Length: 194
Length: 194
Image 1 (cartoon, rainbow over the protein chains, first blue to last red):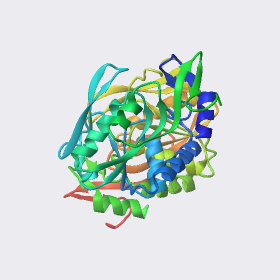
Image 2: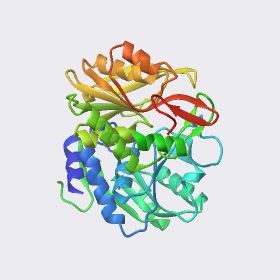
Image 3: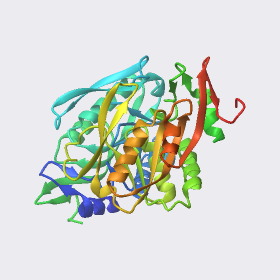
């Protein structure tokens, strides 16, 4: 997605060869028109996939997932990272290991908002090692629902998440695929530097 | 806002005379068309207020804030409740006491996304005691910006937040105002039971 790649080039901060900071438009400050265009892309790619629900995880996934849900006309649910005082019975959980934080956390969704037979599009802001993605897929599978695919805003293609998801048989649609982060610059897969 | 009140009556769970659970459409599962209508209401009420930015707090505020930002054509920023690995320099913080959790936490925003001279609409899913609201207002004031008002989805009018904000001179627009929670039912301010 060209506009997204341009935003990454112009506004993204390459903090190291592993870390890209895009908090000017994606996961702190949020550009609403960019989110609306991102949602168009996801809708276009998944419009024939029979999606009945969108699943994401707080907080970075909520904005693109919300917009995509509006485009596709389906409900969205976001998994919680912390225990809610009012989310206590009837939940489904999965463990997610964070390489950056080096700790395992539990993600949770109420079972009534993820039901057997549904076709679920999982949306997230980033795909790196795939830990969060597999955690979300485990929630869907425990519910007896089906993962119709992953819609990823930014994929760090030099990390193993994408390949692991493909190896597990999942469809992965990433709107920007970063081949490498080097000398303050992001390079995209299958493109000359844009 | 009639449709919102109907959703609260039909789907809200009154867990006690203090706690209303609306996770079927607002802050866990999210109804995208309802969010889009909520955003219309906020746009309509604040369209002449010269809003340049929307500020909210993760995670429950993100969906309505995102939609309102798209309607008004301004950027949105959400304050973080936890320290980010990549949000380290140039931040503004405020302390927020939670009555339900009985603990104080720090909310943070990058100072470059909240600048002097801006007119900020603060959006949140709930207003109860007003602790989060005043915390967000403190961020705006520290930035040298101005709070143009508060856009609240559900106000628990029997708790003191609204009156404290009005006493401090703020404009408060709440789309559903709950007078009381009693016998499993929500009653709205200034209305016969809808």
